[in-house]
Amino acid sequence: MKKIIIFGATGNVGSYLTKYASEFFDQDQYEIIASGRRQTKVFEQFGVKYIPVDILKKEDFAKLPQENVYAVILLAATIPSYMSDYSGELYLQTNIMGTYHVLEYCRQVKADRILFSQTVFDVSLYTSDDPAVLLKPDAAPYFSYRGDHAVYVISKNTAIELLKHYLAEYGLKYFVFRFPTIYEYSTYQYYYPNNVKTMRPLYKQINRAKKGEPLELWGDPEYAKDMVHVYDCAQMICKAVLVDRKTGFYNVGTGIPVTLREQCQAIIDVFSPKDAPSVIEYYPGKSGGGFLMDISNAKEELGYEPVYDVHRLFEDYKYEETLNRFKELRGV
Image 1 (cartoon, one colour):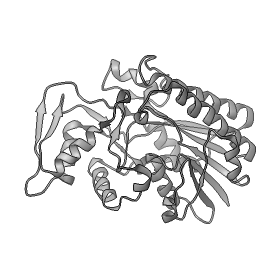
Image 2 (cartoon, one colour):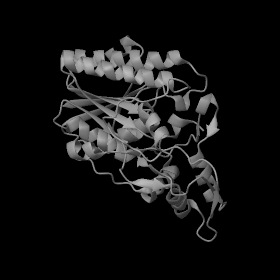
Image 3 (cartoon, helix red, strand yellow):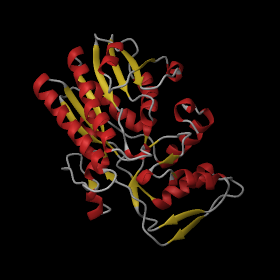
Image 4 (cartoon, helix red, strand yellow):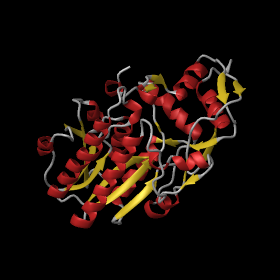
């Protein structure tokens, strides 16, 4: 039976990807194995085996299967959103050396392919020049060498150079997925912009809508961005596990721009009391950041078709909140 190893399975995207993969792949042909640093039994509900591995410790890889490993999905990373105390060294250790250790594991077990996650910050300056620009999957890196994201982007770009080397030297196929914000429900509603703990603006809006309070919309109501649900992201990755190609670089998205007005209205429709719904209050100012993603090659090469529009996305948030299936991974 072919094995698919998911590193970073305990993360926000990784946990939902693991659930999706457990349903997507034929269980008679593929075995999903989840991996992360912490101890957990949360994946037992999906019939998925979990093996704790720290990708910075080479000896930990001996715990993993050494035969019939077909694909490795590498989502484990140190990212700015959850760095409460800035350390460029952590980016270099996890995102470069950790990737190197995973690649060495792939080489030793003769894996067919590795799937790797990047973020949109490697091309973020394109949107500074034109907020409405459609980001191409083959866009050359264009990012700021200043700020708390710089070393992160450098570390991820360096890791991709390692992927290219392992394809050229060992024939290890690789597929890179550029993530914008991936939307999935989480118990933990905070992130760390510039290392400061801050409630995510989206959860502020949802929490206000639940109380029937006004939702504040700052800037141009018609400013649009791509809003991709975690299961659409998972669909793209899982389809790349099966595709007959040597390599690919894909933007993760829907190709459907969602305006700030549409986002706020969808939040009201899903979360606000029906007898006293929230209203949208408009304020002048700078519109929130976002990205428009060209996903044409993912459709053509992978057969990817997004399923979740903005209303279905928030309906799933509400549903997952009732289940809270990953609570032990998130804290409060």
